[in-house]
Amino acid sequence: MKYFLFCSLVVCMMGCSSVEPIVKRSPTAKQSNFIVWTEDLRSNFQKNSYNIVLKMRDRSIPGICVLKKNGDKWLGTLINEMGATIFDFTITDDKCELSNVFFIMDKWYIKKTIAADLYFLFNVDNLKATFQKRLERFEQDGIKVANYQKRQIIVKSDSVFMINRQRILQYELTKLIDIESDNK
Image (tube, rainbow, N blue to C red):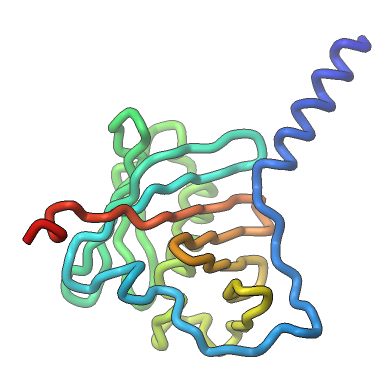
């Protein structure tokens, strides 16, 4: 029994520590209209590649996210570290749709949550997005924060974090350098 309780405590502590804490607005924070997806982080004309870590309470899925603009929509895919496609996604001004979802994640409630998170993450700078009127942006301590209901985006130098506080999920994206475009 003692062994079971000890193991449960360790698992609980590991699960609680896996998702980065949210940034609470301090009195010194300045309201801002910063742009999350600057040209350094995302190109509208070339393929965008990111290291991504999708963290949940008790596990994480590392991989690569590839994103490209096609007309008025964004097409993307999430590939795990073994090269298997986790899911593909399409983001428009109105919604995000997932397709080719890996069988373990192919549940309506998982797909709904991830689609809503990706919609917020990649449309945060889109003035046509449905949530723009209720979005709060501020800067404090050298980081940029955007809040919308139970979701928060944190921008630090070359990384973007999106935290879903309700579902305790975190998406961490770090831009990969495209070697092909540097050689041209």
